[in-house]
Length: 332
Ligand code: AMP
Ligand code: TRP
Image (cartoon, rainbow, N blue to C red; front, side, top):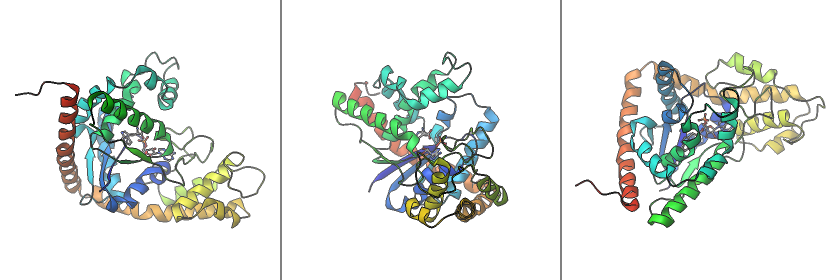
């Protein structure tokens, strides 16, 4: 059976981009694979976090994983820091990846220049070495497949390169993983600035749609979505980013092809209204499941504890294998 792993940072509010680009895919194919999904709290601290908020967000993210339809009886849901082997393997991989490779990561360049005075002087070293930890998250579960949005493509390529280098230096140790990026909505754009991806740190509150937002507010954001002045519905991200974003959101939410959908519309207003309705109908059951779950905290604690145990069982074996291959003396 194919082994799958992915992760989401427990920061900010989970938005429609996270859902259509990643979480929904995770839930759709959970029965076909042996899946591991985690809240990557160790990645969250690459930028400074408020401790109470991190704790609350981590719990909330775990509730979100269940709410989007991941069944804890079917897949392993866990908190990254509950499996200490990730940080152990991360060090071995930090010593395998090169400085030049890390320096070329666009996510590092973006995030480091957005912080402070833009000089990169005060960003954490962890923000720089982050891809080694992400590679460890993946390789430690012998994952074949990593379902992520388009923004993680470069990190996945690096993970493969690092695994390949490790294997050729020390012998076959790691499985080479592939990215599984959805065909539609792999990059959901901001509704107000459709040339920027929708993100947890959106400039305008109207640009990002939270998956737990009330439905009136979701409808309002779609109604106010930025389009353009030509009033022609066509799927073309280059010249019509706003309209194309709405078409791909509607396509992803209804499992239809955005190009074919474009032919059915002559007015932006109708497209916006249909996109809002489609999004609301996929999110309503998710919202309902989350409120049920938050009403039963003991159940969530049980899911988290069981996930940590299952994840540790797999991760400990891989780390032992990697350490032996690299030449560490086994403890007697
Ligand atoms: P993050 O919130 O950065 O931890 O991302 C969690 C998952 O959501 C990753 O697989 C990302 O690739 C995906 N993702 C984040 N933003 C978007 C977006 N705007 N469109 C599609 N996928 C996204
Ligand atoms: N870097 C990913 C993001 O920012 C989150 C992540 C961490 C991840 N470890 C992972 C995704 C392992 C997939 C597999 O979205």
